[in-house]
Image 1 (tube, helix red, strand yellow):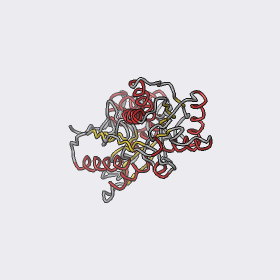
Image 2: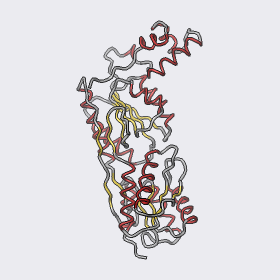
Image 3: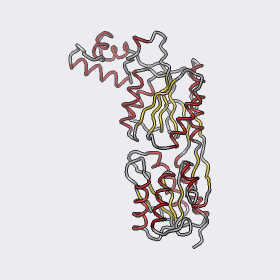
Image 4: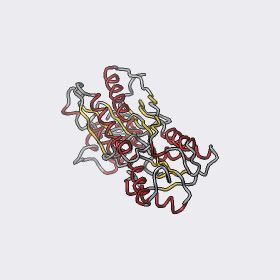
Length: 341
């Protein structure tokens, strides 16, 4: 399949019924075009997914030499591992990384993608498969390799390197059930912004329901990223509302650590009185006392595999998009030991 060509200034001009020169003036600072004409041109540009190439006049080779990437959090070691995998995978390619921080805000992702495309990156890597309609248009019309990571979107824009967050939640629910727990809760998974965390929660609660268990024991931690203190507060809320709860999965390993520290403060032993599980195979999960049961999704591999896709796509005039489902692995540790009470 041939790589799609991005819309041109001539395409915008034709759609708006003006000349390319008028489009050029209207899309640049200090425009002399009327407000009515400019509004018509901007509308046509948005509908086509066109972004003005601000580097075109200075790049005779038409190669910018950088790959753009958006991540939702800069203090999450999982995303840092993915970034490291991508960076190391692109070594010796003369490609640099331009990083954008979205703070789990899809409107900010749209702004960053638009800004990136003004500089014509060689490829764009985004975290997750949930985008605004306009951002989706920009990515689909970009004409460069687009890789969606950390998710398995139903309608991929280009290539995908990820896993099913819902399956990760289901895997943990069944593990806790098999270890004898029947009154199980979930901490985190705010619905409006962290769609991947919400998918984990959805998969977890669905599995509980399928197993014939109560699926209402949920404690929100507020907008992402979930801090340790927010998770500790959520555990308090969970136990206040459901004091007989025996175990909980947390949306991330740092959240699980925060919840476990709250257990210690309350004099609850883990897992003797309350079992804790997390997600992400973060360093904190393996170094806490007790070590925390978690889900490993191969964060570094997501980055390194993405780098390989980019390198192959840039060598091929007609690259084939691919979907890599890396799956997830349950890592059982002491925090979710078999029920003893």
